[in-house]
Length: 460
Image 1 (cartoon, rainbow, N blue to C red):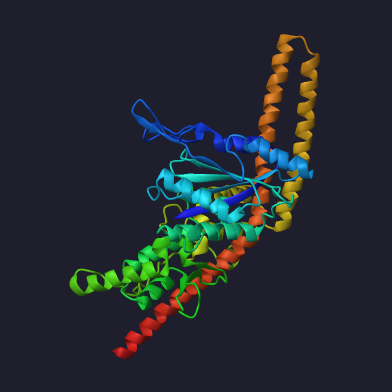
Image 2 (cartoon, rainbow, N blue to C red):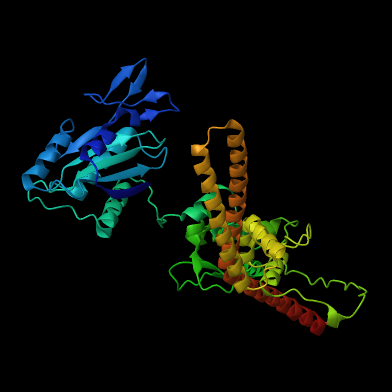
């Protein structure tokens, strides 16, 4: 299995050539062995083998930079993209250093032939064997610049996969794109995202399912719709109420359709032989007992909380923030994903309630007022700085610094309130949409419960 990438170099050809030939990039930290450049590609130091493979294709490995630069100057093309840097990385334990380098040289010849100069170097500084390719952007014979577009990228990847198949190495069936930064860091911090929420839902559904129908019903109760239609190219999973679906293979190999079928078959066999295995059963209806309260006064005189403040308070209730320790958990995946933003939503709600911001116009007026106050505070603090530059009296300097620090603290509070109010204003539309999805989810669940209740009544 090999991953590939290629990108342009604009700054310096010498830098990227030196990087590819750098002996320090070839260290085995775990094996306490250092790979370095050697004329015969193999030396022994203190009983440890040290090797580094560097090969020039259409150029000499020792004078690659000089030869590439000479070609550029001959055709008068020394600007723009000076070179292209590519890599081919293999999964740990799949290739030897010699095989890795052999595949890299063969890939360079198939990709660029005898038209471009390429330096191929094998490194192990990241813990995996990988090849670096430094490609001269100017053609060796006709001076034509290499066109590194999508077509070249996919050709490079396809040639690498063909080589892996020829040498009985596995290939990536469904290459993934670049993970968005927000999702990458959220997953790194173990925070809920749409991907790991789907993985959790699939894991929970697979624990109690023995066939596809069980799996679909169990996922539907968690707010997801599974589409495994054989007429479609990919099996997908989407949130109920959402039009955007996620292909199962993007959740990981263990969540792709063949892997799901294997786990269902294991559950079916376990269900047949293990009498203690609990198969999927629909959620039973648990009718809450009504609570009785006594109201002092009249309902007509009770003031209801509405507007912007009511929206945020209701949203916090649905997330389980208020009342405290209520144990309430949201049903829809959208609100479950919002749980990783509880701190920000709590700050926004506290500000709205503390300042009694009832409407969108009121929030905007609050932001504008704070911006004016912020400008005044900054102007007064600037006067303090001006006085400090002209003052020589130590006692007066201490008084001015105290005033400056007080203004700095006030400015920080003002900026924080402006930021919190602006975030609340921008989030309001999303809150309404998520609440609508949560209400639809609750209504759908209540409808399913009522249908099952009617079915039991008819059977009786």
